[in-house]
Length: 230
Ligand code: SF4
Image (cartoon, rainbow, N blue to C red):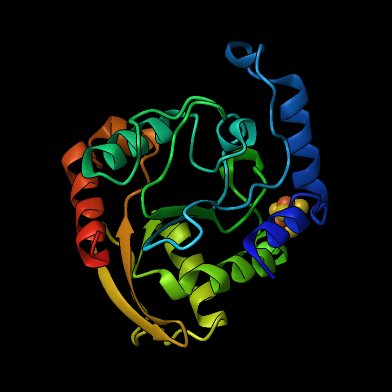
C-alpha cells in the first residue's frame, strides 16, 4: 500500500462516533474569524515529505487548526509557534501556516498525529486512541525506513509514539523512556534506528507561561536536523 492509498482509506473513516460528530459539528459551526473559509472536518492523514528524515508526532489535530486546514498542527496558535521555529531552523518553507493554500512546505520532514480526528477539549479517550492506532501504525511503517529522528510534541504524543514504535517492532529501551524537553532515546527496530526526541508541546499553556521558549523549541529542531543529517 502507498501513502496515497492509505490517505484515501483514512479520509473516509467514521469509526469513532463521538469524534465524527465533533469534527463535523465544528466544521459546520466554524469560528467567527474563519467564517469565510471552508473547514476540512474529516480525518487528517500525515503530511509533508513522503520519505522524511524527521517526523514530528503529536496526539491529535485541533478543532479550528488542523480540522480546518486539513494539515495537522497548522492554523492555530500552537502552529504559529511551531512553524516559526521550523522555518528558523530550515525545516519549513515559510514561518506561518494560515490555511490550506498558503504554499507551506515541510523540508525533509513530515507531521503525523496519533489520532486523526479532532477531539473535544483536545483529549481523545483511550478507546479512541486505540481505535485509531492501526492508521497511525500503517503510516509509520511506510515512512520509518527513511526516518532518522522523531520529535514528539508533548507527553501524550511521546507516550503514544513509543507504543506505536513497539507495535511496529521497535525495541523500546528499559527502563521505559521518560518524557522531558530535549530528552533523547535511540530506538532500534526492523526499520533501522531512530532517535526519539521529547519536546514540550507549543500550546499556549506552555508558551504563555514561559515553560517553553523560542530558543528551547529551536534547540530541539536544530538537534533533530543535525541528527537527521539535513
Ligand atoms: Fe477513524 Fe481515527 Fe477518526 Fe476514529 S479518530 S474516526 S479511527 S480516523
